[in-house]
Length: 461
Ligand code: F0G
Image 1 (cartoon, rainbow, N blue to C red):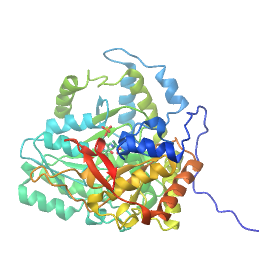
Image 2: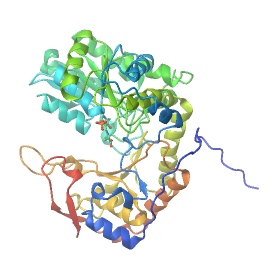
Image 3: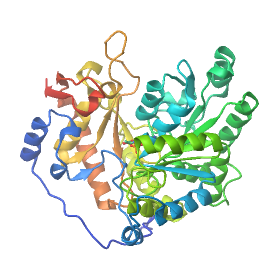
Image 4: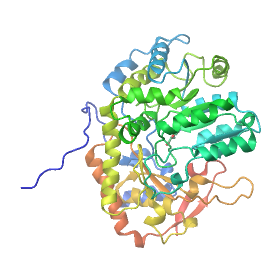
């Protein structure tokens, strides 16, 4: 008799409410795709079966969070839910002060405006679109100081989110510490494939920057997922709790920007949390201009409550084990059938390597965009292009930016899809892979001016 394989993870919840999905035919999807200009951002959600566009704001909340929504204190000022969130942020992230915002980019906006002077540099471990844009709008220049391994989809280093300390030290030497607004440290690094940063690296960044008086701002959007990787991969943390690791991670920074729409299991919300009383004073002042009063920051009381409760659920190890376990389950199955993906498998998504998947399609025929379109056609799965379309155009020359990586991101919302859905995904990828030689690229027929990936339209070649 055959022995069954032991599972490494299982869901620490059961399902109480379901949302019905529409099953569509290939003919229907062909029409919908054509109407959407072969851009998955332009599809209607009702035409999508499994939506892996993003893990942002797409999580399933718990009954406990929904119950909290009913306890929303919708006072304009001093809402009870703000104080609850403040208490939880202090307890789990360890910063003294909280400024709530409607989502992550609003916190990035505030901190960039406060700390960056025109002409400053902002080093970081690979850019994220909104983070870099706010730094640039404040007059700063982003400098990528991530380790080289992060740019290689086949490199299997365990902490491909680390900062290269030599690159950082060189930048400080070259421009002078006065010209460095702060260091942005993302945990995990989204654009590198959801790759974590190690505790050792965080500690060393602190040691390097402190004597120069340079601040460190953590992008804590997926910091709990990062903490889980530290527990699993970094010697000395095996018996720590996720909460202990998170607190130590944050202790090596001065502030964090946060998109609660990821780790914190809500559909909307974010915050800026920090220690410096003067920066806090300024942030509390500015939030009133751009978001709303400092005790609601653009959110309803009920949203603050859902996020406060989300923190406590998200930091549980069994939750993270199942969340990351699900992503790894899909990734490992794809690797087993020879599908080229970014390794190691990251925390929130599988990144298909479209260059290796569709080697006959030239970069200007948009291999990643094509692959995302074919996946939708195959099984109604929606993914996101992260290649030349997302990279946009060079501001000076007007030519396309040609990124090294042509990726398709299959991003997993938390607590939303089942293992059967996961199997549909791997089967669809396999089916597209089997007919890859017959797939033709795309031609761009319309291109908007800003963040073009959202609205560009294509036709089949
Ligand atoms: N930082 C990181 C690492 C992110 O992944 C995101 C959003 C943000 C900041 C901005 O937060 O959306 O709440 O304003 N990432 C989403 C994604 C949009 O699909 O990866 P936001």
